[in-house]
Length: 464
Image (cartoon, rainbow, N blue to C red; front, side):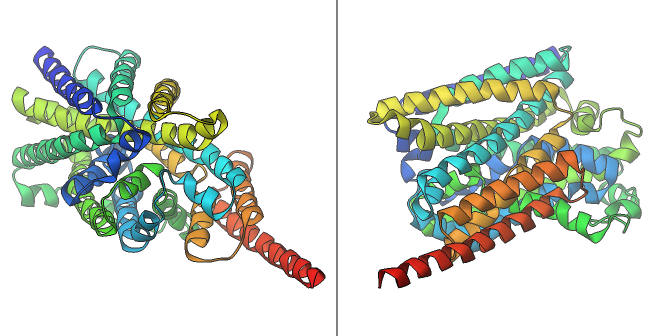
């Protein structure tokens, strides 16, 4: 395993080197946060795919499907793939045409600076939790490939990831995403071939999967609302994530923005089917596995040669690095561009880049602490998608496509929706807190919008 660990270290160092070389061309905030707004279709497709295809797909989803069957993958890869496809079909072009720098700019332009700041306070924690999930998974890979304890491995992982991201910027992220995306597909394909060959071939492998584990929506044991909740979180809760919106805003045209999301979503679903298959087959190959999140690394150790295992480990590292740098960059972009710089006043372009890099460092440390104490990768990702996702979805959806509501409507939806989710999740322990938050946000927005409209009409009548 020392040779494997050396291979992983070499792979990480190559990624760090690429990030550092590309980062020398960063001279402005647009360069650092949006790659100069010059992404083409090839880079756009791979960066959407690689950013979204994170540890939750390779480590978390495979483990969840190992435990619960196909219904355990409702969020990943199926829900998140649907999210990417919906973004490409309906939202990428309208968002790109607004020429935003971050998603939070939308709240300022459509509503007010106060609503913008409120949105940042809800969007940034989502990115930090997502980064924490990747760091925890990184630790799992290192732990499985060496004698390190998981806590030590997570510490090593966090250190590497923070350094990598501070230097990177979006353009470095996108360039490495191309390499990481190819490595990811090759590594998963190698594992798929080795596992099916060891199990007697493709037909034998599929035949070994119990039919009861192939129910995508469960076996009817869950009430309908709980099933809808499970799918709504990854689809609507992640649709307007800063990580995805940054790729759209960085595209050189609206055609590239749309096509990148559609192609990236399709590639995501195709590659994501491999962890799904291995998770389904895993109970047959490794019954009673104590830690389901170790299913992919354990099977790789058992069935791959040393060289092939290095390829596979590189694939996992690719999935993790390509997501965690995007998540930390997203959190920093929101806080630096939409909170710190407006308060600081006149800041030079180099100063804006320094502020953004400092934000990456701070949020990387916070994500590391979260990674140490989290229950698991999948739980962290679901929490990230649910946290504030419902009110953000409602406010942007109505703000992007209608003229209904103003600043007070948006603020009411954000506050009421977030409060409903917190109470539903932690005080009342509802089975469907996300749906409750979604409904509360919509009702609050529309109710206040009616009041705003009446107020404006009354004022107009009084003035005449």
